Structure formats: structure tokens, C-alpha cells
Image (tube, rainbow, N blue to C red):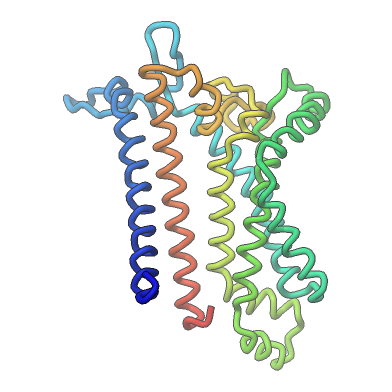
Length: 304
């Protein structure tokens, strides 16, 4: 072990890598297997062919108590899309603007103070954001907009967007800072202003990295649990009309958080289906972010 430290380090790191991959695969297999019973239960025959789980995505009724028992992911998918869209509308422009300021405008002393502060914000527990939203934002919104009860997709989306903001700022700032200085200097030497250089050189060159930052923020919004659980009503129903953001019912994450303690049988299996949907969605977004970062690396000639 002492005489062959290099080989020992390679073996240990390889074992850790294999362990990580195996654990991830076991998680995937476990949640997939656990979701099979409810997928079979909600099968529908179309043109003589049985389509497993089709009713999960075509009906809107969720009733785990009164027969006929029905499970549907549609209301929760709708809630997740609403919250994610609002959160992205908050985090994307604010995050990119803040990253541009830190990277191109702010003095060095300001950057050295603000950048670590932004990264610290990412470590604040989500329950803190949810508690602030529940005790301050939700009552205020209920009074101002005269809604019945608390909980709205609008303010949940705002809170989740603020939670995703540090991630967007940090990753986007790294991408903007990675643009070669020679490109910026060449633009300034041609007589352009600082603003023209930022908009025509820096942002386009770092567009892939900035897009990856926004995607990572979207992934954070989709997987957010506690803020949505605390602030939403927890009712698996669609809002009427569908675009009504002033009422909030349920998301995929809040469905799992609200029901896992008392769920059993097919209801527990339905929660695993929600987990599968979340896993696949976040996996696709993560792969997309990695692909965009790779394109940025290729575009800048490996200088990132």
C-alpha cells in the first residue's frame, strides 16, 4: 500500500467510480420495478393492444380511497410544469444579468465578496425558503388577490426561482469568465463599447455555458420538494382554467412528500411512478446541460 501509492490510488478511485454507477443503476431498477404494479393496473386496451400505464397520463382523476380506485399523474405534471415555468422566468433573466455584472462589470473586490455570497445562498435549506413563503408570501397573496385559502403556483414558482438563482448565477458566471480575453480585447480594439462587446462577443461565445446554467436551474426547480410541499394545498386536481397560476394544487415532488408516510399498495406504487417521471426528466435535463457545455468547449477550441 505504501510502496505502490499510485496503483493504490487508481484502484480506490476506480472502485469508487464503479460503486457510484452501481448505486445509481440499483436506484433506477428499484424505482422502476416498484412502479410496475400500478402501471399494469392503469393499462388501457387500444385497437386490441394493451398499453401499460396509459390511463396514468390520459385521465385526470386521482382517488386512492373510494372505488373505482384511480391514479393519474396529469394534475401533478401540470403543477410541476407551472411551477418550473414560473421559476425559470424568474431565475433565468435575473441569473444571467447578475452573472454578466459579476463577470464583466463589477470591480474585483465586489466580485470576490459577492460570488462566494451567492454560492452560500445555494446552501440554504429549501425548508427555510418554503417557511418564508408560507408565512409571508402566501398570506399576503391570499389577501391581495382574494383567493380562497393559501397556495398558488405563482408564488411557489417565485420562491423556487429564487432558490435556483444562485445555481444559475454561479454556473453562468463561470461560463462568461471562461471566454478568452483575446476575443474581448479584439472587439474593444475595433472600437466597440463595453456593452457592445458584452452583447455581441461575450454572451454569444458563452451562450452554451449560460444555457447549461439555465438548464441546471430548471432541474433544481423540477426537483424542489419542501417549498412546494409547504406552500401548496396538496390536492391532486387540475386548476380551472389550466393557466390559472393564482391557485396551486400539487406537484410530483409534493405528491411524494405528502403521501409516502401513509401510502400502501398501489398508492405507494403510484408514488414510485412520480419518482420515475422526475428521474427521467432531470436526467434528460442533466444530459442536455452536459451536451451544451461540451459544445461550448468545442466552440472555444478547448480553451475553457
